[in-house]
Image 1 (tube, rainbow, N blue to C red):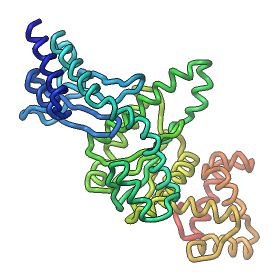
Image 2: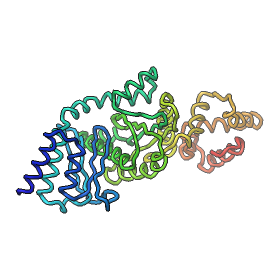
Image 3: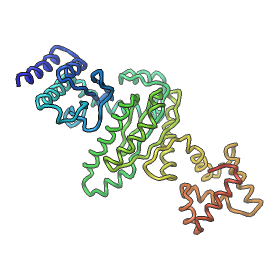
Image 4: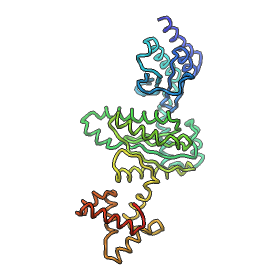
Length: 363
């Protein structure tokens, strides 16, 4: 009991005497002797306090202690051992450290929570092209304490059938909202663990990430995206459809990447179903064809395969172009296209194969 009181007193003294957050974390590592990671969810910052022999947190059964300000989760300690391995005195010390960090930063956290909407609004303005000048970008970048780089890419995680599931739960919408917040927080934590640098804007059923397209993004994105997709389904029963826009080299070109990410979700979900990751570069042809054929806008080199179908129809009195339109209306599903046209699936399959031969293009 004496040792516990001494630890708590030391934490309080560190806070009173003007020490910073890192001093609190260093002292906690020293007195407990257990490695941990501290997550600051307000600023999306991760601080690892591990012993030399520890490379990372062994996540299975890792003990977690949440730091809350009012109803907002603002931080978390994740220890490199299960809860049962900590004594009650050690848990009290962890609680004290969390309280001191909260008290030290209470005013700052309160302001930052209020500023969170302004930060998210800045991200949305970047994505939607609402920034007017380079000077405006630089000023808002500095005011938010950020250093957003030019080399960036937009990725959108869109919850599948979220509104439908909320309605189906008959009054348990609040419960679903809690699950959603946990899922979105899990995304950010996974990205921090993968050393990704990101800024985000959260909608009701999706979250937009503006990633710095650095070496860590290129190396880790595929693995970490696949991992969070699996976690969301196994732990929460929800799936995401994910759209990846291409990387841009100028912050004012981010709206292009944003539109591509949205289009990748729309086209990919329509063609292949729910719960998948889609890169726009893999679906660009389908996106262009959808827009061009629906409006009969067939000029330009990219549309030359379609013009070959029209020429073939004219010479052979066939209707492959009409079937192409039906296929697009069916989101490129041969099954739906065959049902809509009251033809056998094998007939639809033959028509697609014939169109590919005419267009000299594999769909």
